Length: 533
Image 1: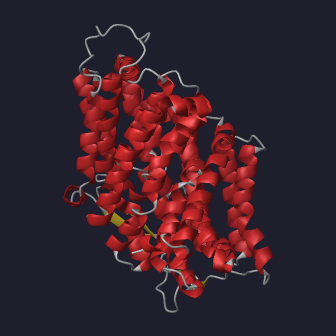
Image 2: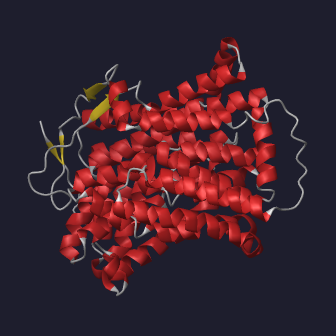
């Protein structure tokens, strides 16, 4: 039996939009102002979303329930599995004292906090976004900043703000690969357009995070480092995206940025630090866990390696009562669009989290940590993350219910009615999509087709608006509940998610509006129109 989505269930567009937005508004309100623990707020919003789907949108109860189950499972694998193992690696290094040694070396290399936040949150974070994505950059960089004496709120907020410019090319180009799949636009055209939008913000973000940390005085003091980091990332990002494609953009750009910043800091020197002398036996090995992680995750992400790993165990399970049951209809999807697939990929061997676990085991061997001690630390991590994993599952379940019920499209169509202002508000639609789902990839799957359809109706470039969805979406990454939970968990500040959300919200909205302004100029104003391929 096929169920057709209805994007105006109340036969009144404003009321239907309010209905669709109710779970999201409730979630943000419970977190930011109700001070409710985030796992409870996520569960409450999920129950509300199920009620909206079943009684508001007349979605079959079995389909709504299975959408929630599918989302919850996806929250555990691959996302929760990856977060768990990243925190385990961090715990291993702390337990052996190697993290303290690494911290001291970073203090010597970048003795002031503005330089530290640029090198770690922006440069290193971009590398992890390019290789793994799905929260790993925030988990690693927030933990590092916390150990460098940043306050918990600063460590979380700055890591989230910095994890923006690389997101559209994250996980070896996964968001744009998904966008290509749902729009049919050539992937190199998508890469070119995105590579003519994000480099501008890659240049801005290092200054932005320093400003968020230390204000104008911090920017004046750290501008050479910020400029070096931004230029050495933005230029390769633009060139690789335009002449090669989306796959290696973040990895190569971040390597250029890391190298340039380290060279500048060494040439520049700086004030003497209070870090103890380098007499620890692990002073040459303290980087090895992160080098091992980078090498293993990069290798694990290669298509040929992933294909080989999938040959050991890879199952694609059709979700009962949901797979090919839901039908998207015009104007969200063209007439005759196939029914929505609902499949769960059980690919534990090739999952990024498994690669991270392998890196953990290799690190334990290098550090000579006993298997018994490793097992005990792993169980401690699992217990510590129990509420975080619950939250991630509930958030993904909420996103899946929103998607399959059609509530996401109702909100999207409301923005699509903005006429000639659509390039600006369509960009904010991408921002909303990532804020809802926690993933630029998922936002592209949700709204990519709608963006191109509306672009044709408004008379602007479909390629421009498809990419506006993903570039606007990167600014929503810092306010999605999943990323906030990852940050709070990595810093041991779980339970303070409302403070983190308030810290980053206006940064997110202002940056999204700036992306929207750029897209508007590229749609209508010369010479910006010449940037559209």
